[in-house]
Image (cartoon, rainbow, N blue to C red; front, side):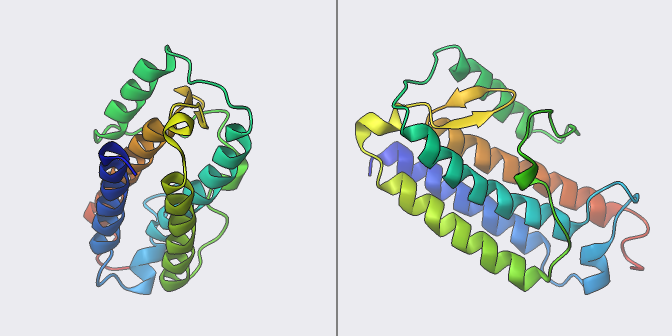
Length: 180
């Protein structure tokens, strides 16, 4: 595995640990607390993030079979998307996102963490097995960036986790959270 891939994987793990650390000590009602009925709870955020990893693996395996290089225009689009995800700006779920990445229901945090760790291990294993040539193929599609290579996918996933960490911060900062 090359050094850039190792750094990208490490960043994904760092962001995952950071968001889970934010939830340390939260009561069950706080984990289920929603600022508004249409907003996500912390459990829904973690469910979503676990689903993104699981869906990413499926998408990468399927798209890798096409053996297509990443379109050059998608590199700046991916950089733009990652830059947005690194901020506290609130963004809506873009059209075109697979329904499978949206939270389904609120499971116990321990179950969600176990599911996320399993999906992440499979994602890590898949990426670590990519050859240098395969790392250049477009293997991950986002509605904003288009198809990007494995590095772009990992950068997006890490920034995406960080972005949802800001969402967790907003949930905790809400006046109703402490009494939940």
